[in-house]
Image (tube, rainbow, N blue to C red; front, top):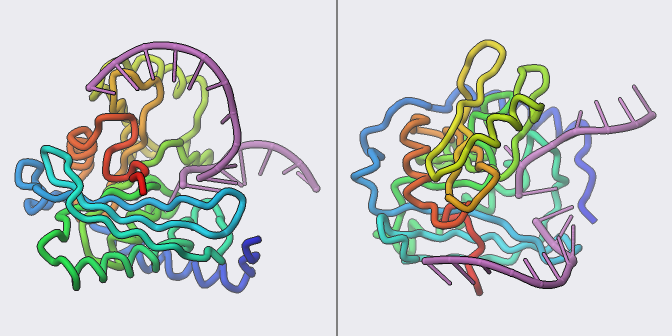
Length: 234
DNA sequence: GCGACAG
DNA sequence: ATCTTGTCGC
């Protein structure tokens, strides 16, 4: 079983998250203008049944043809407890290492942008795991979550109004904004596939703006979950 | 105390 | 994250 994160450790995490949050960049970055991107990376973690053993996978795909050109899988032992809001602290180091290996081994495949399984600024500190990773590695990232991370105190909730909007998404590319009570747009619910009934929740991770993020996610989507973060068969 | 909470 | 059936489709 995972170790319990002590309150001391959580305080540490909070401080680090505050510092990282100040460094998140959500502006337009010409380097990742959609038509210039040729390599997109993806990061995901899959657990072995009921254990704390997990496989961290980093893949790099070409755009627009979505072919896998690089894959790095590493079996690891997860020791940190999962606490909603602090997802990045479980996995960021492993992802960081995977990116370092890529930089050393195959620099030519280093992606212009990474898709991360989780949220970017759609987060109560505006620093979800995608942003966290983007800042530590100093690379553009996009957060893609399969479920809405609710923030009741800011009005981001899966209520009837939300469900109503979701039911009106019919075609690939249909989307609606995820707005706080202060009218801050933190992310976009995007239908990534014509067959899907549920959207994915896209938010800026780092060094990118929301429009670009959504466009890239759509270009990478065949199934509901964008190709770079889908499970790659062993 | 309870519930709700990306993966 | 994981457990789960059959069904449809690239």
